[in-house]
Image 1 (spheres, protein in one colour):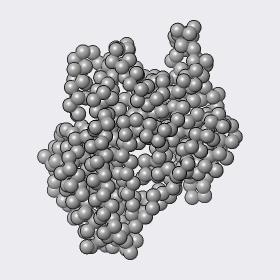
Image 2 (cartoon, rainbow, N blue to C red):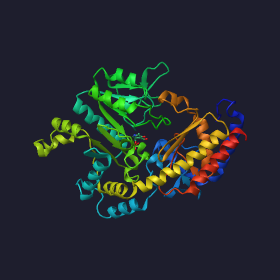
Image 3 (cartoon, rainbow, N blue to C red):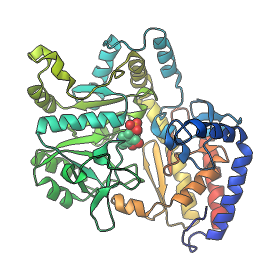
Length: 464
Ligand SMILES: Cc1ncc(COP(=O)(O)O)c(C=O)c1O
């Protein structure tokens, strides 16, 4: 692999040589993983149970043996400080004892029965208390929760269109898989097939932070729902411009469009996400990934007003509706099963606490300070953004204002090199971007292991 990046910033021949050295080092340290990958390629379409698992740096994925808290061991006996944490699924630490115990207990007491339980009532009450929306449903993934929530938005508004932001990621939700081409026209996202979805008819696309474009696109009065993260986190971090959320809320209300806030990543901000921290007022709230400690689960909540409209369209059984009507095209046999409920309760009750967040944010800040200092020391035109327990650097001097700017600040090969360098020194960061997450068990010494490796990496890169 050859890296193309301006020689004025980093000498590309140096980079190629360093990459070659790191690839050799990787191969020497992972013989057993290499064997397993060879076997995996015989049985999996893309070599691994989930094709993304191949996207780690190195010639093949590292095969995990076990993980606990902030640490992970692979089948070759290598040990890692894990700052990827399953790309947020394990944001509260691998096998947190409170969650592992609750799940283990429940595993012996009935896993799934298509029946509610008292713990499930507790979870609903806690979601309402914590996030401020009164009515909830569960799903098995954030993708599904988004899909179901969009279905509800269409049901209550009678509109078909969804508005999304360029550079978004909300999971495998077909409506959202669009982007601008170089001429500013919407097209299906690169590397994704349209899956039969008529994006032209069903989707409006605008740049994040562009209030004028948002107003223009909503003024047609045909958009059921805007789906957005509180700030973008998936194409690199795109912070919110001052006044943006107030405008977003005012304009969506004016045009009768529901606002769906997806906090699946930004829950790194604090125990109530950005919604609580910034006083946001979503009509629909979605949260997945880490919410049950890594057990597949997601939740979506709606306001009283949305609930009233849902019930008007599909009355519940206790208000004279037919029980069968409540199917509504969303659900799932395993949704809300008792294992998941046990994971949800334990996570909400014992792990998503102010105290844990304070520690996570302190550790993320320790990473951010050190990375910032290294960037400054080498005068690199890069920057770092921190959102609570989550920090990410990008190869551009200022934070991007939207998805297009963020995309321009990405450099896949350079990212892959840095990730490989860190991996070879016992540190995992998220393969898809330069994102680092701090879990409650992360210790200062773990952070310093990352910070040392990152400092050495930059020193080697710039030849200092
Ligand atoms: C903001 C956001 N929403 C939804 C999803 C989808 O989550 P899942 O893949 O668990 O369905 C992701 C995944 O990265 C995400 O970042």
